[in-house]
Length: 147
Length: 294
Image (cartoon, rainbow over all chains, first blue to last red; front, side, top):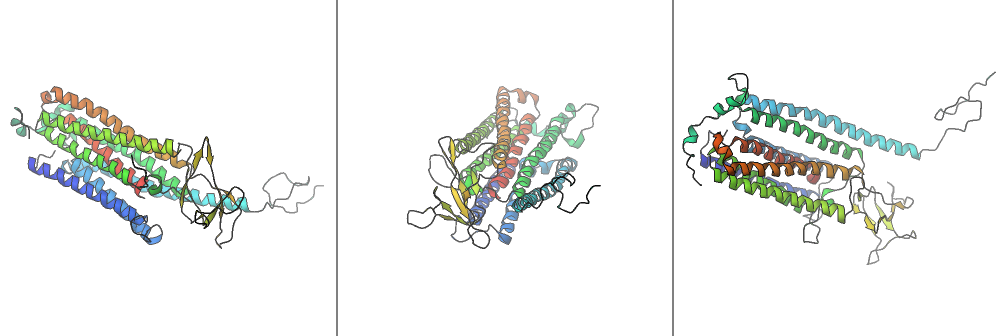
């Protein structure tokens, strides 16, 4: 409850929140347009270090917006510490979820490439001549003759 | 601000007293919060995990494909303007949600002062904001579905995987109006257009890493999952906004009728729907980040 603040202070906080969230959003969009090469001809950060820096900046801004909304608009800052921890601590599980699933996604991508390479490779399996064990993907070796 | 007859004695009013009435089993009040408010927080936590699951799935699928449609190419239309304005319309939508979040905070504050007219006024503005957001989203979806032919299973937004040129149907190199070859670079975006009921997929010739021409082939559709991810995630968020507008309307009518004033608990119901509404804005922060900024 925002009972610790006077009514005027509360209204000032709302105005500050509006300015802050608005300013961060504008900065985000301007930086995004700059990084994607729409603002200044010849300048873009779509690869390499610049791209990582850009993504880090965007995630940072978003996390700050989220912090401000939760703690001041949703009044988490004025709740009991236990309530705050019981709501916010479980979200740290998402850190592992992000690491695990993005790694898994990259692995799917790598396998997709692998399959593409395999499709390109020539078929080295010889046709079955009758006296070899049945199997599609066995390498062509000289199998011992029966009898 | 508007004054009411009950506004003055309510500051002495202790919210913890209300909280005790909502819990069963004695005088203990976990976290000094009312039952309803605490459960709203835990519902929002579970909802956050649902959204996180969706957004992480988006990330995993995006990592698994060699190319991904670029947001500033896909989301570049603006109502009544036939121009390519990357990200401007979604920025507008973001601001609509920020404003409606701010008006919601004001409604909650007026509720704490037991100011019925103030609550109704600021809630009404919040509902207007929510409705504007839904209208904007309807425009965005209509553009993508009707004009650009994206569906949950067809994604006409692709990106070139290598440098190359467009070809005519007879295999010759397509030319621009000034006679230069119609070339493209690795990473360039394209949108496949529909001709009648069929997609008009151009012939292209890519170069390999050493600059040698590869055999001609048809351009490909973009990563198939993109459409489904976009419609399901923004749709799920839009559904939250829609339900929020419904609940806000019901609670605004209740507030206007004097129901919450009679409870004399600082319009706690307004505070609870306020938590939900801020959460919708919070989720949009991350939808905006994942779909439009990164």
